[in-house]
Image (cartoon, rainbow, N blue to C red; front, side):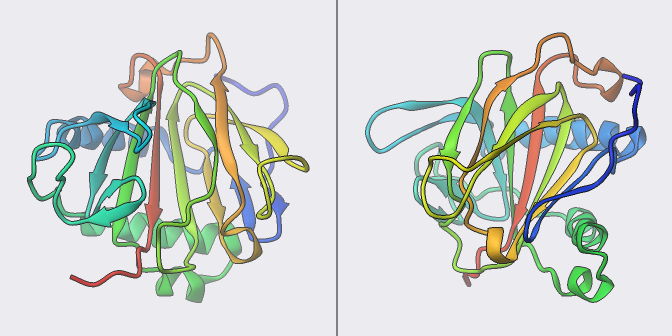
Length: 219
């Protein structure tokens, strides 16, 4: 999709930075191909079941550590009991480059050490309610990469789910990093935007979101 007016990088809140069009089309295609492999297992992609019995509308596959509400484990006891796929070094390097780009700080990028990734697939009806990423014991930034259809992304405050919040559009190839004072801000995806699929990425429909995190956990 060609932009009439180029989008510029924005500091949405202290420590929360949106960098449009950061991933090249080739990188997006490579990530889509990798996500397809990860989705097959050893722990396959699934709709996560919440403790109260609800089921998340997004589908998730994990790397490095397996996330289930609200903890990390090496094996997926809520799926098939197998150990999740390893987090590849090339994805760690991409995360370091993302932090360096977002914060304009090569040292911060070099120090970034993610050990898990959550890959979420959104179909046209999927949503993600406002939530905090707080199951990690590390306060290191979260790196978010978007591929495929555009979404409405809502980034709020660290105190509660209510306003103030900022709504922005995340498009294919966009980078969003949040850390520092914004590390525990509530955020979510109220909806995908219609007619924004990007089949040239290799993803014919829907949206992929990869988030890199540092759990702060040890084996």
